[in-house]
Length: 236
Image 1 (cartoon, rainbow, N blue to C red):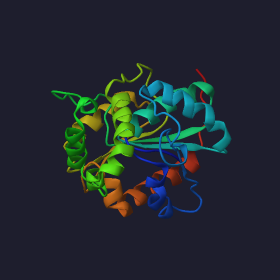
Image 2 (cartoon, rainbow, N blue to C red; image 1 turned 180 degrees about the vertical axis):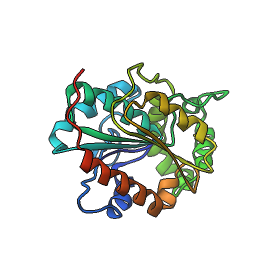
Image 3 (cartoon, rainbow, N blue to C red; image 1 turned 120 degrees about the vertical axis):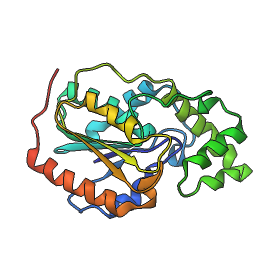
């Protein structure tokens, strides 16, 4: 299962989730440019450019059926990667799109255009562990440019108009998430041609970091079915 982090997130955000899944599930978390071991690389401000870069690296980590899990910003990347993978004929078996619908939530002003203080307040409003760390000036100097670039990529992106994906799609949401509510995630149904499931979890926007066990159980169940289905590659 290839995991795509949220805006400002890192590959390590999925470590605890990976520990709760069966050893039979190999978790590969993507590290976007501009953070941790890729700190010297500029972050992408255009989502398709990032998708193209990630897509080019995928063959090296794929062996057998592959699932995608993307949270928030990562959900948009997961969808665009799925389109590319299916066109290439990869063995994609399930797509988990979490905490972001196909359309950005309407706002008076895009979050990526807010002042530093406004951006920090917005992130704190998302909830989840560690948001208060942005109040540290040293950490904020490192993190805010990355976060702003990620949010710009998400907020200026239009989801590709394509035929419904011929693989199962799960749209996942936090039941207390005002940024990406159930109604927003339900819009992914129009993009799902191989089955669709809308699943809520206790928590807000970063529910998957707050309560891992219910999500891990759900993913484990779906991935077990994925191994049984093991669909043949689809070419376009």
